[in-house]
Length: 503
Image (tube, rainbow, N blue to C red; front, side):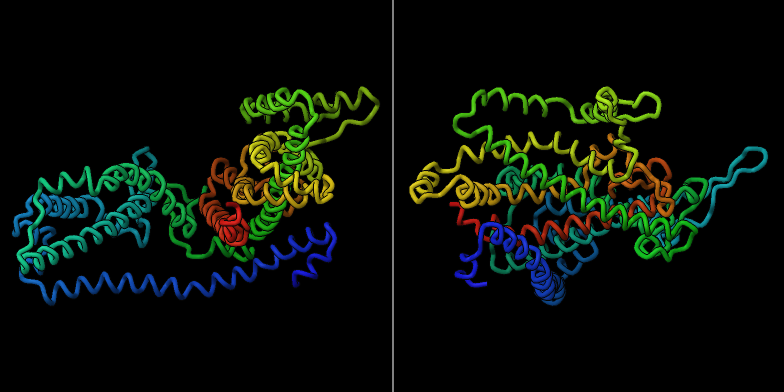
């Protein structure tokens, strides 16, 4: 559509055109990303080639000290006077060898089978301790990361030995151990400062994450629980079960049906939970900040008090107030309905009513946050824009459509994306209000409910039923959905594409 055609549209047609353009641009963005994949792999290939180039050049053109560094870490540094650096590299190699001999090697050896000897209990009560699949998988993941780290250290050892050799050829001065220690606090201060957080991140985040990904390819569930039982590799069977219902087991079809139902509701919930809070929050912020409105501080204080109460307390209280029973109606809302002569409503027991209720309750919880954010933006919109619009004869709606709303969406665009992704994983509202229920659809798995999000269903499968294999697949798919949406949305919002316009 050309500019003149766009200008000829009315306000609502322009809004519709923008929404249509946003969603029609998503396939184009996917195609653009797909076209950039070969270039990405080309760059990665060039990086890998450069690494191999250094290794090959060091072997071809280096002296015997450099070549011996292929087997003994830091040998080239030690024999050329860099004792501190050489001892650090050699010490790492010794620790790695001892680790592989006495600990890591035995787990890597069993990684392909995850154990073959089961723990048995005899009639007299004595047990024969066998393999533990959980420990084998966990420590294998840790050992694989250590091996990868060792490969990096091996490359650094070769590169440094070759660099030292080249510097000796031109009689350049080599850094001493004292210089290395000084550089740790100066030149390489950033690496020194981030080393401990990186180590902790690897231990407590990366290792469990990789472990969870591997579990998705096993049959680790309540029927194969270590240490009494072993679990094994099953390939893509869990993915087939969840996505197509064709996996092994009587509940495969139910799991697949539940997945698609829960996924659809998760996306619907995320959409309404995000945009109802956004539009209502913007509307309330505009009303509070409108000239002539009195007691502005009182309204803002009320909203802040709503945020100050811990969310789980508010949700548990709301769950009690929405309670329903056949005798006295249940919670306070049903008591009020019965008092005025209306029948009690099963707010959280009927699937459709429960879905509407959790969206409304989420508005009550989330709108204050949006109001405070929108208020800060409203107070920073240049007043001369409104004055110029008034001179041009613009009415309040036109000023909102042309100035306020574009300005706010431009600033809050990234926040909306993160809020949408956050609502996909919004555990508290769903679990504390409905527990994921009700489950009145017999075609669904017993662990899933009709208000379950993927994250609450995952929680119930792991905590209540120990179905870690299927739960891991759900975790991977949640990540894929969130990552894909985030990348596409960030690539198409004005805040990223036209960042300079805000200035």
